[in-house]
Length: 293
Ligand code: G1P
Image (tube, rainbow, N blue to C red; front, top):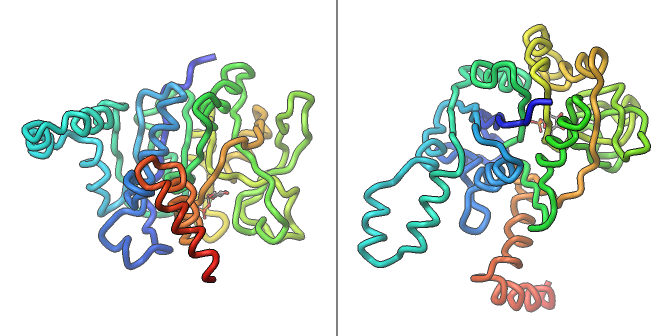
């Protein structure tokens, strides 16, 4: 099986859940402490061996491209001030991967966004990482994308991350149903986008990490607008499951929905508690705060 070298990160959404901040700042650039959300996602992909990252961007997303570019004046000033560690950190980010940006001219669904990456991905397998879902794995642990890529290489089958959600949350996600195999992976037979609890095939939800064989594009091309009038990735996944087989790997990482106000706050607090610079003060502050509320 071909190694997974390419990833698509859809980042063309309008970020309406974060207005007014996202009127001018792309939601992917909102920081968790001092690093934009997108950097966590790109790092996860790079740790999985991804070399080319196809960013599906919309209007007003130039800040994302600039972030992975060289900022000569800034680096020059920092170097003159003797801040070599900061310069190195910036250079590391700029050399992290090949960032290739493609415009999605209309926001007509996640499936369409992924299809926009086809000219770059071609006939290779590819990972898809949603730009507002942060997955944190331990330093010794595989990243979620790495687990999916390994499953693809070992089985030849597209593999997606799955996580169990409570019944009252199934309508927020794509939900899959199938049979659990002896190896701990779900053989997926059904995929339904944001079902009502009574229509859900299970409580296994899609948290936004996927590895697909190149066939996904041929199904996306034929996918008609579905739920909410959008071209849904989940509808193409139904066809992949039927024609080739599709696996679900349960999520082992910590996950934050940074596209949601509460999830964003959670990520900032929990990661703040691990950040060497702010952790001690934040811990004391939270302890004091708890006594007051
Ligand atoms: C998208 C997908 C959905 C998935 C979710 C994860 O929905 O369509 O299948 O479960 O991401 O966040 P969205 O949240 O963009 O509406």
